Length: 157
Image 1: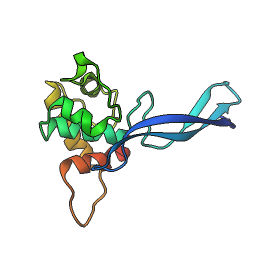
Image 2: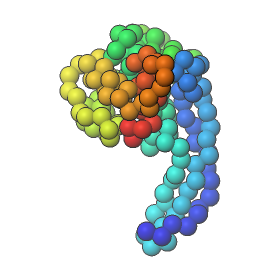
Image 3: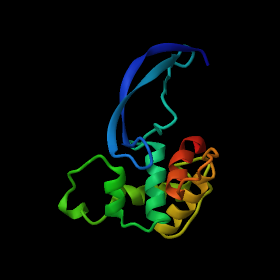
Image 4: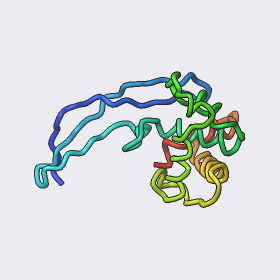
C-alpha cells in the first residue's frame, strides 16, 4: 500500500463531549488518502468517529450504559445522548437506533473489543457497557460505570 494525500473532508459526529455534557453535533476534519497501487481511498479521522456511524464511540457506550446498567427508558437515553431535539410522534417513546446498536453488538459489528452477547437488548447493552468500562484508563477518583464506559469506548475500537 502506497498512500498519497487526497484532501480533507468534513464529517459530523453526534453525542456529548464529556459523560455529563450536553449532546452536540460536532464537525471534524478527516484526512483522505489514495493508494497509488489499487486506487482505493482511505479516510483517517479521530478514534471517536466510528466508520458508518453518526454517533461517537463514547456516545454509543454512554447510551448502552444508561439503557443497560442504569435501566433508563430509551426515550430518556435519547435525551442524554442525541443532539436531535425534534422527534416524530411514533418515535417519542422509543429509540430504534439504540436497538440497532444492540443488534450490531450481538453480531460483532460495533466494537471489536467487546465479545458478542446474545439476549434481550437491555442484557446486551449492560454486558457491552460493562466490557467497555474495563477499557477506561485508571483515575484517582473512580467515576460512575456510564462514565467509565464513555471513557473506555475509544480504546475498545
